[in-house]
Amino acid sequence: MRLRFLKPVLLATAATLALSACATATPYGPAGVNSRYGYAEQRVDADRYRVSFAGNSVTSREQVEMALLLRAAEVTADAGYDWFATVNRATDRDVRLQGIPDPFYRDRYSPFWGPSWRYYRRGAWSPWRDPFGPEFDVREIDRYEASAEIVMGRGPKPAGDPNAFDAREVMSNLGPRVTRPM
Image (cartoon, rainbow, N blue to C red; front, side):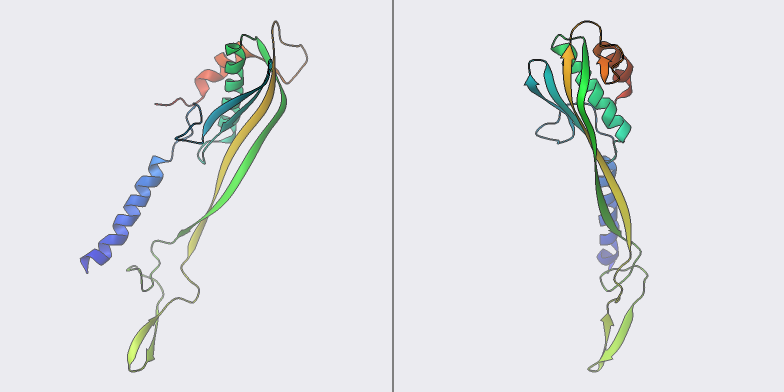
């Protein structure tokens, strides 16, 4: 009887610990084998790259776009260029709905309070499940991924082009604002 009450408590505690471990924004780093979140780049031409940054469900759109610009600036500086311009830039939003059952709902499988029905059948009372089912809380989970194709150049950045960025200026302004791995 004791185990019957202890089991849901242990499961709830394990679920809470698992969720709290994932409740940090995507740190700025390369996406790789262990994680699909982070930055990636691909060389397209001698002076052109495709750069992307994927964030987890805790990473805001602003953080994802800042990390994308920072990575574009680092790629530009590493390749020996001074400025970059974004040719194609997009931020995708992935929305997922998650249903979480009410932990205090009770039916014949749960020890907590809740509606229950019984009916008399063949000389015994039998439990009957709630016809409306357990209650669920629905949570919307957003995940953002930003990508851009950049063209790099040397010398001063083109004046009047709102899509052109000085690489070193972007690194000094955005570098301290992104979440670094611990």
